[in-house]
Each structure stands twice: as C-alpha cells, then as structure tokens.
Length: 280
Image: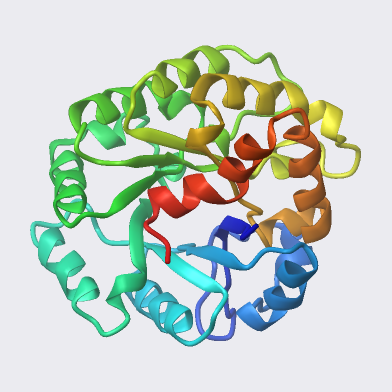
C-alpha cells in the first residue's frame, strides 16, 4: 500500500528566518531541514509520498516548495501561501498554477492561529480570498486552535464549494478537558466539505512524558466525528522532533488507528490525502 505523509515542512535558516521559532525550547529544530533529511526517514516508515506545507507568509517560499516538489519523487503536493486579503489574490494563485511546476500546488494555508482576531477568517476580504482559492480548484488548510473554531465552522458553511482540511486536529491542549474543542470539532465535521489531519498531537502534549494513551481520546474523537474516509495522517516533521522522532510519530498513528479495518487504515494513510489533494 502506498502511504502518504500529508503534512511536513522544510526550511533553510541561512536563507530565511522562521520567526515563529522563538525561545530556547525551539533549539532542537533550530537548524536546516531538507527533503534529503526526510527521505530515509520516510522510506524506513514505508511512506512513499508527502505533502510539503508552508511555514511562513511569503509567496517566495511557495515558489521554492514547488521547485522542490518538481525536483524529487517524494513530494507529491504543496500547500502554499498567498495573501488572502489582497485584491489580486486570484492573479497570484493563477501565476503560481501557470508555472511549469504549478500542478504541484494543491492547497493554500495561512497561520490563522497566530491572528489576534479569532474571527479573522470571517473578514470580508479573507472570505473573498477563500472564494478565489475555491475558484482555482485548490483546497484550503485550516490552521486553527479551539478559539478559532466558531469562525472556521461559519467559514466552511459560507463556502460549500471549497474543500477545507483541518491541520493538527485544531491543536487542542492534550491533557485538558475535551470540550469545548470536541463539541466544536464535531460541528465542523458535520459539514461535508471538510477533512482533518491526524497530526501535530505530540507537540500539544507534554513533550517529555506523552504516551499514545494520552492522545487516544483526541484521536478517537476525530475518527468518530469525521470517519476514517475524511481523516489523513501527517507527521508535522520536523516540528514533531520537539517531542518525538519521525518513526515514533508514524508508529503512534498506527497504534491510534489499529482497531480500524484494513480499508479504513488505508483511508487514513493514503486515500483521504490522495483524494483531497488530488495527488498523483
């Protein structure tokens, strides 16, 4: 079975600062990470295709990621960035798609969870930008935390023509009560045009003491709410290295989905990502 890692990053700190990487706790990942670093880890975990996801709000990074995708056999798609609030957002998306490597652009993402306005997604200019993403035939990755979920729910309702992908199960704090996160995530999952990444959980738990048992209630909530055919695995490498190795993240995801049927496991580790991102 082809297995897909639907969420990872790369960065070169000599060429671009990652401003979110602040504080000494980030020291373990404050170095360059490339596709060459990921390739042996993915091969060992029997991952044969990946989705490379933006880290900064720059179109230039998206261009670089498209070039990376075109230059190797591992990256099957790119989730890039454009300024959704810009009047010419449709033109920017079109210019990326018109590149020789533009077919690798599968979705757009913005760091919504860093916006001080929890209703940022509902701004008229953002809604217009999201409509342009839909018109271009792309998906949109929702990078949110629990306080942003009400706006995300309304946004998904407003744009039924756009496929949304919830990153990192909307980043609940592992170990805190499931609600209101679980109730709001179920409300989001009730809408047919949204899928969810089973990713990013280890860094929302205690980095040194987490276990698969700690993550299980959150994974079960996601799998029950969305169903395996709308859930996809993502490693969040190399951010995951703050709390776990690549192999540990893959193994933990296997453990959390071990009670599913073979076909449902295939959905989580392949079919959902392949279908949602139109991977080839």
